[in-house]
Length: 244
Image (tube, rainbow, N blue to C red):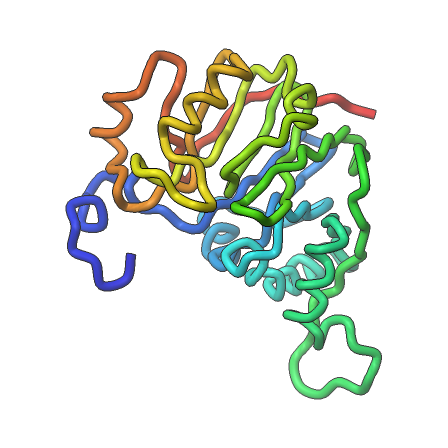
């Protein structure tokens, strides 16, 4: 955190060096999907060698999850075309307003614009041959989406799982779920609340994400129950997806 001298922010443990939350799913030789264009997308792409994207999926339109959208321009050049992007109607409304220059029909001057192909999420879909199940969640009072890919589910930035969404998580074996800090928060799960989600889903492996600096990696990990761990930047998971 800018200007912070707490133990976590000054830690030499690389797992305490956290960029904004995002996720990249790769099915070798078939699909490369990015969840959210975080504010740190350029640095994340350079660090982890991301060169191509078959699609971007947006969970919601908060700044830390969409403000890297302009960096899709580099993928446009590398791939020779637009990047398909998927979001619900409310998220598209904010993205269009925030990046109006990318959607306006009027004359443009100066630098380029990101070329994106817009797709509205209204239910399960497939992209690049990968089946995707949107999981409606609440981020405070704001509806947003998690995503399920086969036996893997990614639920960032949430504070509640609506009752109709629980069946969508049945059979998940690897779960990534939001856990901001130990204390309760109005728009994010606390650790205890996230552990309640883990207990109800009962995956074989659960990872907590979107932590703030209240949660040093090593000390927090030591307190977690078996089968639950903190995620960290650069973590690689092997999961099984459904192909179409």
